[in-house]
Length: 348
Image (cartoon, rainbow, N blue to C red; front, top):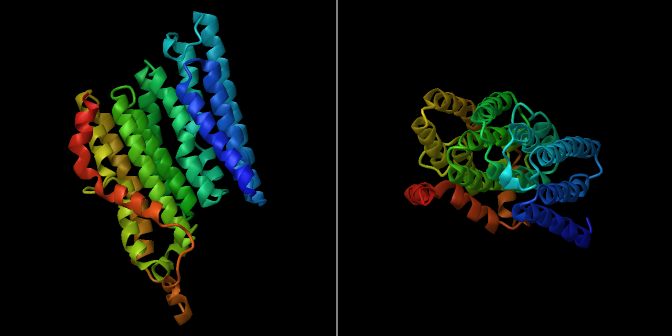
């Protein structure tokens, strides 16, 4: 892609998200979300491959549906209450409709089925943008409207953690596994949204860091399926040793960074007398942990049948920049000791 066009599209992505962040009017927020969608579509379709075109079409139709629902709900809110202000949502009907529209935008269960299919058709770089940056604007709106009906959010959250766990069990494609991982993590964020918005933000931040690291690992190894992971030891031995830790951090095992948000969320749910919900969420985390362990096993504990020529690529210099990956891995593995600081910040 022409670098000038790429720069324009990335600027459009950033501008759309920023407009949604700073808007207090529903029309402006909707416009930011639309700019976001229109900016990423050429990035998704840049490889003229049938799968990429199919994924782009599915993404466009899904996002257009969600945007139409959002606009309809905001107009309904203005008609019922005379308010266009995002933080002045009082009527339950538009609040529920907007929650549904934003759930469709980010891919929460039960309106999640587009996400694995779309992510499977993209390259890893565009998939990374879709899994991280594209979640920010809808989350900003969800945090602002704070739906009063907590039952819907808890139902969305539990459904997402369970679907994210069950859906990833039988997958062999890494992008689909990462999509189901994304659905499960979004479920954890939504579960605690109305009880502690700051904890949702902390979970979102750790999810972004961990997903960034895992996508970059797969991109550096040029792996798109579980079988291709077996050759990664020959390409980058040190990275292959660290990659299982990144995956276990995504699964939420101590003493890695991913344990912190899960621990704090379970604690908060228990404080809110939602012990059964917390138990179900913790059990669903075990499902996710299984496929992370499966990936770790395929990457670090199996060897691909290699010829002698295939065992030396690690001696060659990588053309991809590795500093972002190094920073991402350090943050993914080592931030758990900052949990007391995070807890102190959350109580401010």
